[in-house]
Amino acid sequence: MTNINFLKELPSIDSIMEDGTVFPSINILSRKGVLRIAREVVDGYRERIRAGKEQGLDGESLRKRILNDVKGEIEKVALSKQRRVINATGVILHTNLGRSLLSEKCCEAIQQAARGYVDLELEIESARRCDRTRSVRRLLALLTGSEDALVVNNNAAAVLLAVHTLGAKGGVAVSRGELVEIGGSFRLPEILSSAVDNVMEIGTTNKTHIEDYEQAVEMGASLILKVHTSNYRIVGFTGEVSLSELVELGRDKGVPVMYDQGSGILFPFDTVGVEGEENIEDIVKTGVDLVSFSTDKVLGGPQGGAIVGRGDIISRLKRNHISRALRMGKLNLAALEQVLIQYWKGEFNEIPTYRMITTDYDSLHERAEKVVSGLRKKFKTLDVNIVKGESAIGGGSYPTNPLPSPLIEINLGEKVATGLSRRLRTIDPALMVRVKGDAVLLDLRTVSEEDDIYIVKAMIMSMDEFIRRE
Image (cartoon, rainbow, N blue to C red; front, side):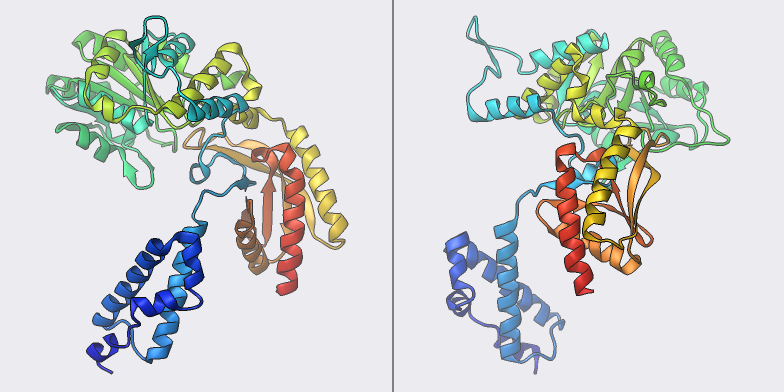
């Protein structure tokens, strides 16, 4: 059959809409929605037929395939929503799962801001318009010891705004060893290039010297940018210029220095045994002009980017018209304000990210024993044990500092382990686990204690069904 004749076999849109398996979907999506999906599916088949990609089908078989595809697309749309996930991977700041969890007070603040009007840009006493970020700016300045602060919708936006404002005159100098990829194929060089025309890549991947920065300044660089390589480490024959050296150079040459810290650490975690990263307050004390960081990583707040530092430079950033396009919405501001208040009050244990990072091994082991006991009651011969393992803070934070954690190891055989993990992702709430060889691994560090019982039930239901099917 030629392509032209095959095109004539395509079912009409009306016949699809009147089909008994499709028509009931109108009550779910509306006639307009189903009609649009049907047209998209038929148009897709038309293009594939013209390209010779659909061969060997008769008219009835083609119709059945199209109807199945239409029904499949309708189901996708009808079920398309964010689903709750129980994260038993042990990755605390799991980017694909939304990074940091918010505290109860943050959630209450979001709910209040969402349900009613708030004094977002209103000074109650005078009834005049004011800065929507006034509260979080003040809190960030107090917590970090900086002169002023500014918040935008993520840390990449913070870097973009600062570089566009300060690097426009002569360009930005940055070490080649710090040109990071931040995930999702987004790379720092491209972000910098979209902000300024002149990105001066200096030094080499493994070594950059103070003379490299000096030369860039002599060539006109109007901003020195140092980037914390939070999601990797270069070891061996390496060398980098310290932040304090760059601050001294910047002061001597009259060029501002910015440090992209990234993960947003407001608590001195080294005091509780989690070492390897500086907190923002200590970085500010070096005298660096600006520090930027994410608010939805180690800080434990909603998505956002913060810049703290010199008041006069922050004022310049605020006057940049791009800041309007990057501003944070009222719901995120409400949540960020609350988590910063919790830091100010010392309510660290109410912040889920802090709590997960600092939970001790023994308490996790005690919980793991209860889960294992529940599984053994159902499956008498199940090869399940508690083994020593590691959790990751994630989100590009503390890449070389894993957290010791007990892991629940269920040995099933490679095929069964992979299939079971897939099955666990399809239940509601979905359960995310690790698979290592023949075993499924569960890490309770990233699971709230009240969800432990759900894990037992989900594992029993899924293993019983999956193993029986196998």
